[in-house]
Length: 175
Image 1 (tube, rainbow, N blue to C red):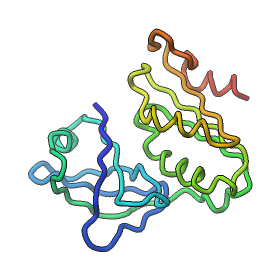
Image 2: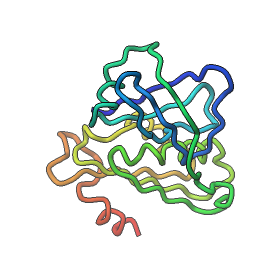
Image 3: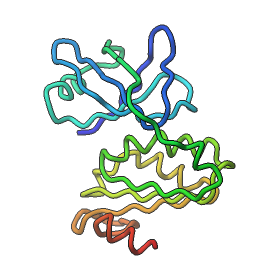
Image 4: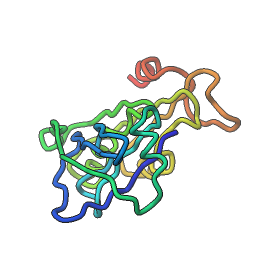
């Protein structure tokens, strides 16, 4: 029930920073805010990850590749990543809550030499609910980067190699 949409912006490229959001319009269904789930360090348009929940998100999920949507923005504040240069970083997210952190993680990994150790803790109800699974495998390969995955008790699948437990408990274990 979560899809990541790659949006090509017509005209002037969108100038955004990690942490900002856009208003997406599904014509005939309405408009809703969604975080930009891609870093400005990545080429192309933008990406938005959308969980199917209401009328606008259901309309977006029904769209076929190449469909047109309205995009306004970017809006909101951004993460002060330049001020964090040289520091160790900890990113903690769960489920679709990882979407607004993804551009900050990408930004820091694309400028890996500017940051200390990077820890990423991501949780979900079940292993199937973890977003960006293939990308997290790549994140874990970056120098001085550790990715910890956890699922709620009973959410693991056969062969699960991650942690089992709620994010706050796993965070305490990580110290």
